[in-house]
Image (cartoon, rainbow, N blue to C red):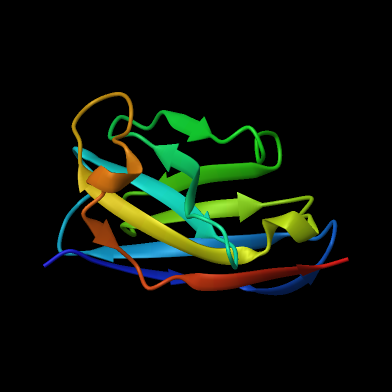
Length: 124
């Protein structure tokens, strides 16, 4: 059974940093795409960053240059380092995984396994 558990959220002032972790079990990252998504109150869930099965990183324009996605295959964990945080980054952050042995990532609707989410709040 695929399970994903996020951690690392919290309250931070604008300009600060947080590192989110997504610990995976029940599968290995080989042939899987992993994505970080977020959902702010009253807004639709949006993709933030992805890492393909072969390690290519993708970022939404809103976080490019501030967020970094990485994976530690030995720990079966994907990280999202978030720097220069802004109040508009406030949201519940989710990680998701899907079997996707390609050099890109699937649409959000195709991600079949999701974590429970972790709250990130950025104060101004």
